[in-house]
Image (cartoon, rainbow, N blue to C red; front, side, top):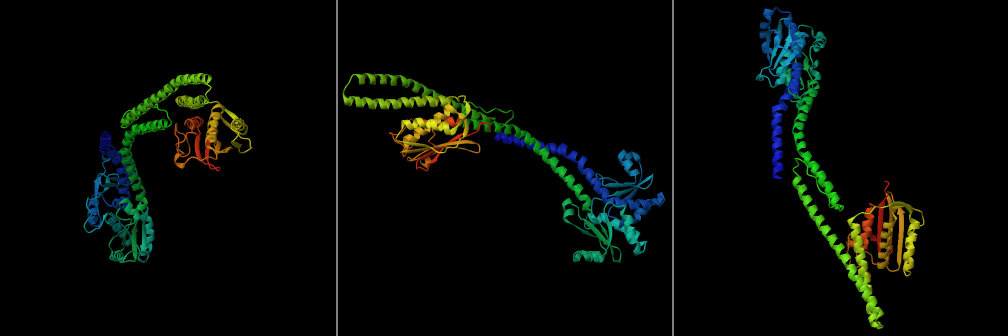
Length: 535
């Protein structure tokens, strides 16, 4: 366990190091920087486009001074520089030549072409001016200045048409509303009436980490308010995509090595599960496989050692039972011979009675030895079963007729007259039914009922008697070899203790089950169920 935990810790550490060295730089270059570039261009495109148009009307030597004069109205720095094409990639050159805004998130610079010789440069400062509250106000103050300056040149009646034209330069909505259409809290309305910039956050803007979703400012002392945004409509999908990719890459980079580490263990668990199932079914020659790089091989080794010891123990037990059973036949035969010799040489009734008792016990011992040998044979190998279609009603009548003739004091009744075609091995199933009927005769009193029926998956046969039944606590044990319940059995009625165990073996070969419950006659009801092999 310590080695497993140590190897897992090493894998996690190496995965984290790999993420830091390879995954995060790749994510930065392929996902984060393009997303930040897009956001930077989105927020500055309108301002850069309006300024570029204004600068185009001025002589080149006056452009820098013009920007310097209006710098106080912007939350970021403005500059003019010569257009050196070698400073940009081919893609950036094409983008600039099309009068598009080009952002550089690593340096927080935005470029917009003025003419063939000069560029407008927007420089984002690292700190928010202390007279502003957040980034949203900083990014928007220059926009408000430019729009207000453009509107003040025209009558108020033309403002909506001017805003419609200005909107074409912006990547986010720019609208004009009256003070009466805006309903915010008292503090925000007070700032708005005072001409200050107010930034309004929403759940969407909070989700993407942007300081506001909408920004607005009153135009001088008029009734009109310029509203910028919502920004989240454009920003949110991009940011969510970026974060989703990041979490996916991070999760996979951490999870994949752990999964690779777990695969050998998972294969070992499958092997151990298979072995446990086969051992439970009595296949003690089954062994667990050793999987390369699995940290559960020690468990597989332990299971294999246990299975091998169990197999040796069971094999030794079977060999002992077989040997003892075979060896008992010789003295039994000699005793039978001596009994016959003594019976032929005596006329004493007392002696003949004693010989009969000895012979009865000897026959019981001989029956026990035969059952032991047969049970050992059944337990050591599964015979080849010959499944055939047999009509249950006719077959059971033939089976029960012999038992009825041999036991006239017991009424054996076959319930049902319907034909039922079943599939099973005739020889071994006859043995199972015979053992159950013999058991019912031994422990019943005067009645035995035998029934059958077709089930959803196969067939069912039951034998019930009017004896004392089987106690609830013993019903799961009666099919075990040599099990005998003291309350319901006695020495006069007891058998070898192997009859029901043989029944269980035979029904197992048919992939079925054997059970016992209470009978309507008052005794025990033994049930055999087995499926259709064609299913």
